[in-house]
Image (cartoon, rainbow, N blue to C red; front, side, top):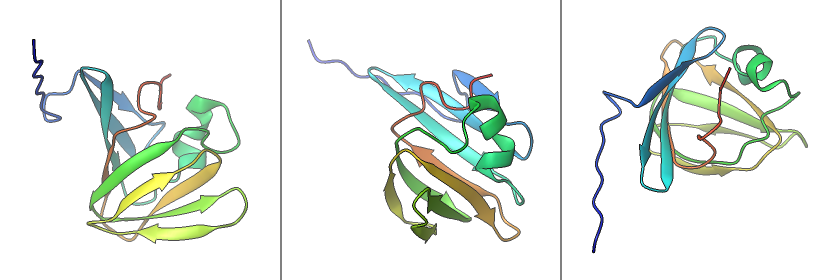
Length: 119
């Protein structure tokens, strides 16, 4: 029998607040955990999620889509890119990231969200 599951990120299964400046809204749809990251101006992974993860850099893999705002991602090896609305990205483990500008960066993430920003 076919399965159909639909959930709204506007009524998430769980909301995980960061240390400050943002949150991750989480829904579980079948085998996939989807997150909507809301990273406010001034947000930086190493300052606002890193203390929860207790690692020097983010060790999660992300497969995401930027809805609004801008975010810079810097890999541990120094490779860096800026993500803007409409960008889809695969980000491997070992990175830092931060919001650029005065607008929150909102990103949908389809990988790595099952344990992301858990206290």
